[in-house]
Every structure is written in C-alpha cells, then in structure tokens.
Length: 125
Image (cartoon, rainbow, N blue to C red; front, top):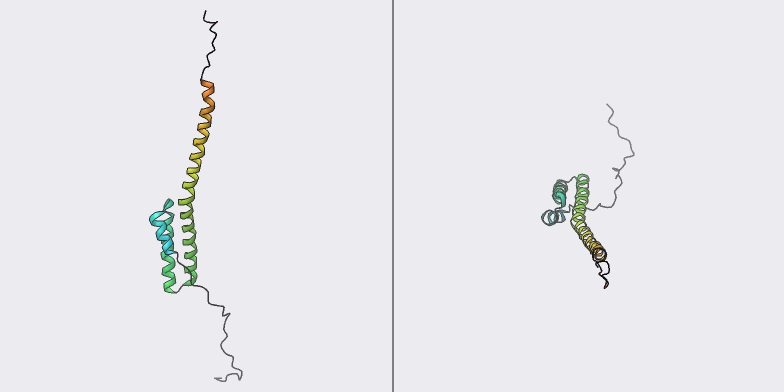
C-alpha cells in the first residue's frame, strides 16, 4: 500500500469567494398589508403565502429557494398593489369622462327636441 504523499501540498482551494450576497428579503410586511387592505383578486393572500415560504427558507438556510420565493412574493405584492390602486383610479376616470360625454350629448340633443314656435300662425287658419 502506497501511503506516500506528494511533497507539494496545496492549500484547500477557495472556490470563487465573492462578496457576501445580501440576504433575500421576504416582503412579509408588504404582503400582510396587501392581504388586509388591498386584496385585489386574492393576490395579497398569494403574496403572503410566498412571503412566508421565503422567510421559512431563509431561516432554514436555503438562500437560493428564499430568493426564488422572495421574487414571487415581490411580484404578487406589486400586482396586488397596482390592481388595488390603479384599477379604481382608472374606473373613476372612465366614469368622469362618461358623465362629461353624456352631459354634452344631452345639451346637444336639447336643441333637437325643443320646438321653436314662430309668431305667425298662418297655417292654423
């Protein structure tokens, strides 16, 4: 049995020590807020589920899965916020423009439906 080792011992290689990657955020507070106040099409609840999964993976040490679930939680939070803020504003703008358009149509149609009587009634005699 050969137990000889080479004279040239190498130190253990450090495989690409990059600067410490930031800890993934779980967006839990934003998800709770969206679930309670801005739950458009249940997207706030879905964001809450992914935020809890991200926090669980972060605590267990699986940072890659934590980043994945954090990304999904951020996406669903953004969709819930946008849906809860933008869509009512868009609906309000459509209602206002519709009312303005209908009022202009009503003013134009008043002239069509009113009769103007002349002072001469020659046709009646």
